[in-house]
Amino acid sequence: MALPAKMANLTISVPPGMDLPAAFSDIPAPVKTLLKRGFAGMAQLSAAGIDQIIPLVTQAVGGGQPRISADLAARVGLGEDATESVLSAASLMASVLIIGGISTEALLSALSKEGILEEPIRLAVAAFADRLALNREELGAQHKRYELANETFPSLRKFSASIDLRVGFDADKVAFVVPVILAHLRTDAAHEEVWFQMTKEQLGELLNQFEGLRKRLEEAERSALNINRSER
Image 1 (cartoon, helix red, strand yellow):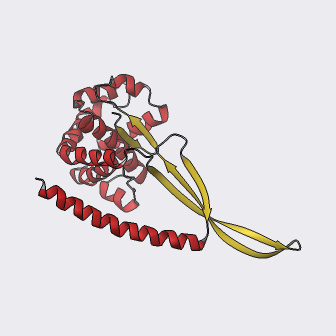
Image 2 (cartoon, rainbow, N blue to C red; image 1 turned 120 degrees about the vertical axis):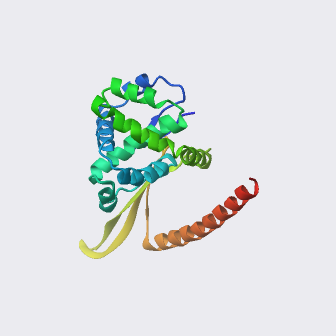
Image 3 (cartoon, rainbow, N blue to C red; image 1 turned 45 degrees about the vertical axis):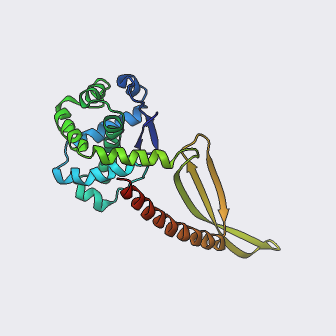
């Protein structure tokens, strides 16, 4: 089964047992550059910075979209762009090592062969991999939950919206202006994107439905946790 590693808006499939050098050779050049910057930044992380990155990796492996703020980047000890690059590289590493079951040495060798990982920082990146391995169980569980939750149907990848002003005329003169919400939904399925518009009233109704869903989801999570505990 393909294993996702998120990098910006790109998903790379890393099937277990795949020839890694062959897989990495197919990565687009801009992504290779992103990964190269990510591993370079990874080598600069302090122990405290690594502790900030690991939860983000767990979130990404579970299908989340971690947000890199200026405050978070400051705690990591890098700039926002550099932190984003480190997260991309670390998420790929987690998918290959933890989920794909590939050895650290095999991964680092494949990265080096493609020029993504420079030899002077290899030991520092290997140390990060060792730290990541301490979270093997949690990372694996997060990915299993992600796979289960995303079975059957396309999954939401991104939602964006903006405000458009519609102008009404009367005898060639502006008579009124109506604001309209323009929204865009993107999923992980090919060609599955939706653009639509809605009014302020429809937005209010949608927010009420989402609030009800949030409460029911939290209750379902509590029930699932109790069921899991009782089965142990």
